[in-house]
Image 1 (cartoon, helix red, strand yellow):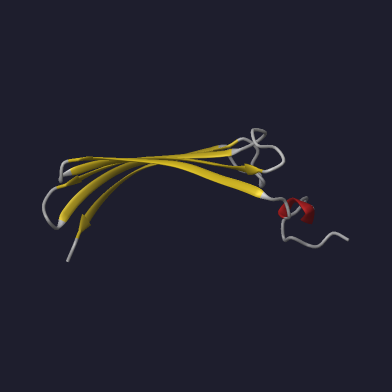
Image 2 (image 1 turned 90 degrees about the horizontal axis):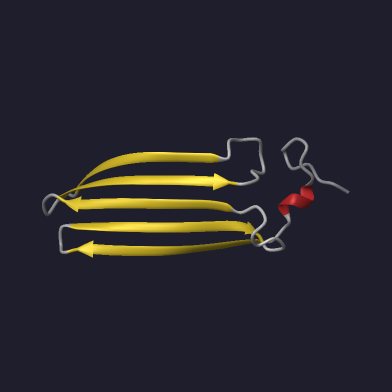
Length: 102
């Protein structure tokens, strides 16, 4: 019997597969005023390690302007070789953040 998953044209068996998640994180500080963070992610089905993974990355640069103020610029992206739902394969964003501590 196939249960209703709420998604059209998608059998329930697709939701019971085991997935793997792995990531690598690198952080480099430049004194007390700035840092770079790079993170790479991979997710996929355990029965097909290199088959159709979802890959994501983040690169972030933060500079401390004062004790209470910092500014961050980040780039993030996701690339899914075979999305489960009908969406674009690649998404990315560039963000800026101003942080103020009280």
